[in-house]
Image 1 (spheres, protein in one colour):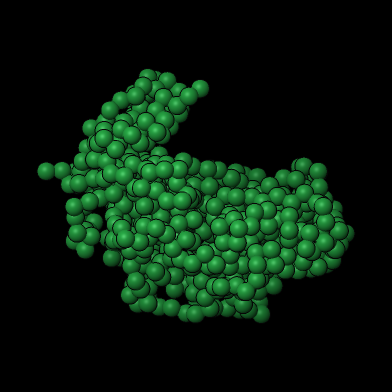
Image 2 (cartoon, each protein chain N blue to C red; image 1 turned 30 degrees about the horizontal axis):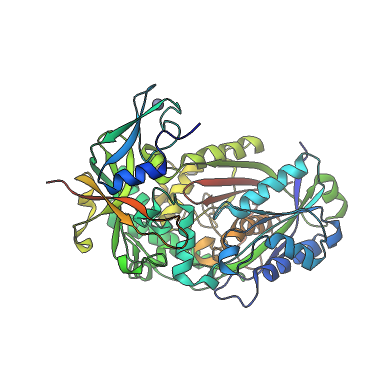
Length: 136
Length: 392
Ligand SMILES: [Zn+2]
């Protein structure tokens, strides 16, 4: 059995600012990032859907250290977002000064777009990543 | 199933920049464990070795094979286990099953790592390989980052203001260093205070350097055997592995609503408790996975020692100290003792066994009358392994 939404397709859509997910035919839950089975009920009966990219900040952390090859990204902020369709998605929080970020950000509305991490000798090519900005 | 005993133990010093190779460190710990068991290398039937990043730090896979050959455990099955930071613990769990089933009578367990040889940037990169490389590494998620995210969720969920929580987290590091200073094998034998923690450099907000365990080099080993063999050859106070558990979770975002709790830990420890026929209250001493200060709170609650959201108060009140309700990380934990990831679980077995044998009096860290010990190790986003050790 093949994935309904393989990495390559999700990755390509995100590069074009489209966030794809999977809707479960059995329980109606949305799974994103994609898996083979519904992350709520385990059903394999899933359909590809496009998500709004809107959600709320659940948590965030600004990195002052970086893995090899990503030193020039520091300081960068990783954010965990609860999408309005239900699932949580991990990405970067952009357009904000890290020194001004506080716990007040939790619950704030954000919207996603896509950017590309070019990858390194260990990744199998570039990886798209969701980036979130505060909603207007 | 047969009862499984812990015989001899071996442990190198945990350190920065070890002059020894991984194979040497592992071989030295292993031969000490075999010798302390009153056995020779030829008595070992198989070897179960935790090692995660050997290929990156020295270009060396199958350290298990070379270390066994170096010490004269020639031609035996030697297996490398990889479960990120839980590699050593899952090696022990597996070895327990080989003996319990009756297939082997005497096996070697061990673990080794040499992370500092990579330098901090590559070490950080390779540790990130325990996150989901497809869907979460793109954003640059690291392990301090993972726990920093959990820290804010913890603060929000349990209504503990961040400033207060940070001070309570600092107390975890302070306690670990106080005890680690008394551990001759510890990497950082230096006391620190709350101010040192709160003034250390930011790593991943809100975590600072002194909330984080170091990169480490080192090895640990033990010989496991059947009860029958132990009774025949050991002159030490018997210690048995009476409960084992293991469970896994998916990537961080797919654990969503359950966070900051790690569901895998709750399932894993329940397996270990029920196999041993005990409850959290029965545990006299625990070594848990304190890779970051906040991780100690999250672990201690899931292991059943404290109510959810209450672990910070427990550290504050001294309930995790030697004389407290549940002594935790009296070895110094990952924070002070060090965290050579493949070795960590086996090192936890080493120190819990020492405590249950009452061999920690001289160092001034003996938990009086300790009979039951719990081990907790977390690898990656959610590979959890737990072991229950019992004195007779
Ligand atoms: Zn479903």
